[in-house]
Image (tube, helix red, strand yellow):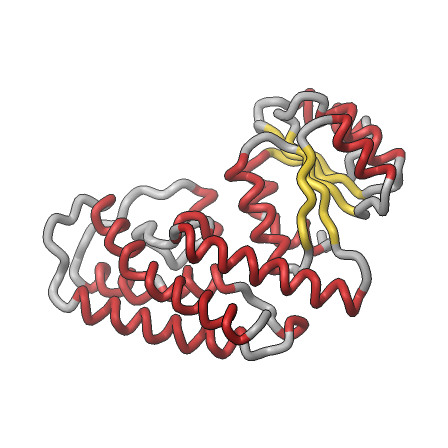
Length: 252
């Protein structure tokens, strides 16, 4: 990633910080910001700019965290401020609370898409550059995604970025065949809600790929059938996304 691209990413993320925090405050129903709200946001922006600058100055192999993770951590400033002001935190889902335990007020974005178009595109450029840089030193680092939900795809892509991998998305069995005919990825993620998912798992497994499938927790038969078709793991959707970083990186 060039210096100009790094600067563009830092600028876009810092510019989005106050807007994202303010949107979170509005979701809480707080009409008037607490005292020192704007000063708190300025502290968060300064911390975020410094943390991103430090991260992006490192070689890709040493970038153990991603820009989105730093953005989420920077939300600790308004979180702590709201807690000190006695604002009641919202009820959070178990999945969200586990993924971001310090984000008591649900301010942090789940995806860089939530930061606006400039930050999202700059974040994708960073991920592509990191994947290319890591792949150039350790070999192919591609994950095949067979699914239907674009928000799920975005979360898989962001986990892949953090792991220095890239994602190739296919939506049909015909598209899958084209991928399998070439230099196929070694790892795949399959959304069982996608048409042809079970057949896709069988073809991937036959091609020697490690497959992780996910679906609704109530679809016990579907999850079991995915494993019978050759999936290495078949998990309820919530559990998959709790472990997505580890699974995409190749652990667990």
